[in-house]
Image (cartoon, rainbow, N blue to C red; front, side, top):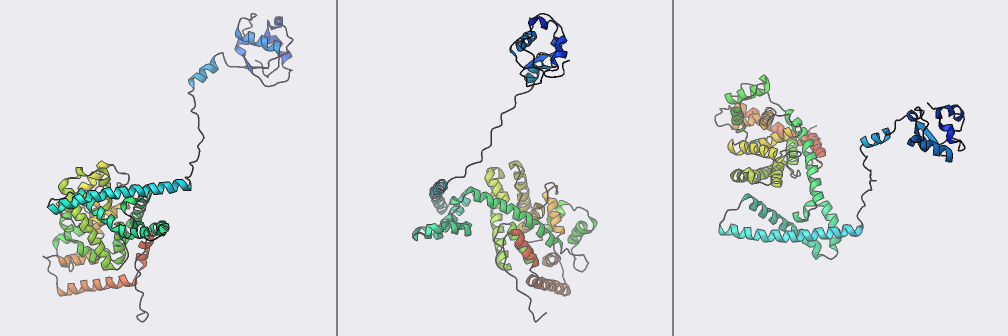
Length: 458
C-alpha cells in the first residue's frame, strides 16, 4: 500500500505502467502536495497491464500531464453508496431578528385600534338597545344577553371620564399617561389584547402567591376539641374524624357540615389578612376597611350565585369555550393548561356542590384557594380539597358556627368565652398588620394601613 501522497512525474512513459507497484520506491521520495484525483489501491494491486480500466486511464493521464493524485483504500463506488445512504441535510437559513415597528407604524396601529373599538362599541350599543326593549316588553333574557347588556352599560359609564379627553383641547396627549395609571378608564372595546393577556398572567401569579399565604394563615389557627364547646354530635364526630383519627368522612357528612358554615358567618370570622388574601384571589379591590372588604366579597358572591343558577338552567353545553374559561376563572378554578372537557367537569362539580347540595359559596372559594397552589393531582377530587379546607378553619369560625346552630344549647358561660374570642380577634386585627403586609407584597397591591398601638397602653 502506498503510504504517502505523491506527485507523479509527467515524463513517465506508458510502458512503465505495466507494473505500477514497482514504481513505488522511486515515487515515495517525491514532495507530498494537495490532491484532486483518487486512485484505489485495490485496483492497483490487480497488476493489470491494460489501460482499459478507468483507474489506469486516470493514472496515466495524471502522470502525463502532471495532475496531483492521492491513493485511497476505498473500493470503487463506496463513496457514491455512502452519499446516497445519507439523507441530505436541510439548509439552515440565517435567523434574522424581527424589525421593530417605526413610530409611524405604531401611531397608525393605535389609530386603527381605537377606530375599530369605536365601531365595536357602536354595534354593542345597537344590540343592547334591542335587549332593553325586549326586557321592557316583558321577555326574559338569557345569560348571554344579560351579560352583554351589563358589559355595555359599564362601557357607557366609562365613556363619561373618557369624553373629557375629547372635549378639552390637547387633553388627548395625556391619554396614554391616564390609561397607564388607570387601566379600567377605557371601555372594554378599546382594550389591547396584549394588556388583557398580561392581566391574566398577573392574576395567575397573584392567586398562586396568595393561595400559600391564605393556607398558612388559616391553618395557624386550628381549633382544639372539648366537650364543653362541642355539644353537637354531628360536628364532634366529623371533626374528630378529620383532625384526630385521620379517617375520611362520607360525602353526606361533608355536605351536612358544610351547610352550617353560612357566608356571613364565615366572612365575619375571617381576619383582615385573610379577607385581603381572599379579595386578591377573587380579583377584587383590597383597599378599605374590613366591612368594605366583606361587602365587596358578598357582592361578588351574589353575582356568582345568579350566574350559577343561569348556567344550571341553560346547561353547561350552552357555553362557548371562551365563556367556559371566563366562568371558571371568575370562580377561582384553575383553567391554565386544561382542556375544555376538563373545564366542563370542574364546572359541573362546582354546580353540583353549589346548586344541588347547597354548599356556601365562600367555603367553595376557600377550597379553590387551598388547592390552587398545589400541583395538579394533589387532590383526587374537589371534595378532598373541601375536606382539607374544613379541617383547617380557625377556632373562632368553628365556635361561632356552633353557637349559630338552631339545635344547639349553649350556656351563657360558653357564649361569654366566644365573645372574648371575638374581642381578641378584633384586637389582633388592629395591632398585627404583619400578615396583611405580607399579603400586600405577594399580591402586588396595598391595603389600608392598620392603626398603630397606643403608646400609653404599652
